[in-house]
Length: 143
Image (cartoon, rainbow, N blue to C red; front, side, top):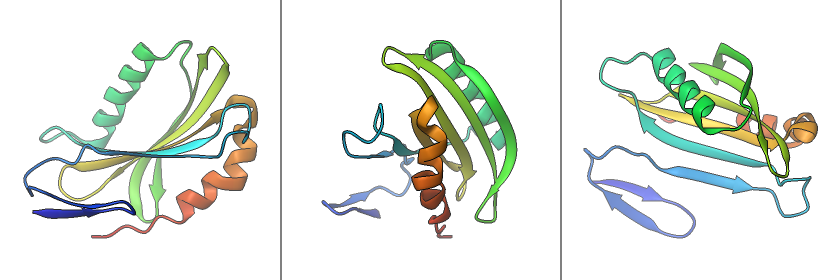
């Protein structure tokens, strides 16, 4: 059994189960037009699937589900010494246009993490400098 720990509880999960958890942190209300947030989602690559194919599947899903989805950039990157893929895109919501940076990073085995930084499009650059870059810079990988 693997132990999961957060500030509210500990939990044991069978070792052969796939971690598909999602963690989201939001800025307090009043922090911008829409409070910025950081989300980390865990998933698994399909057997033999390269990371770029996984990322392309995510792109297809985003295109199909988000109104006026526009890809700004998609590049191979490096996050704290790990080969990763980063994409930035916008989409429309009733309150206004949103912008998100997603970084897809391989973990151990077939596990992959998606780290998403989201804010309203006009405020994204300010929140990126004030918060998102610090959050991404604080990541320490284990294993």
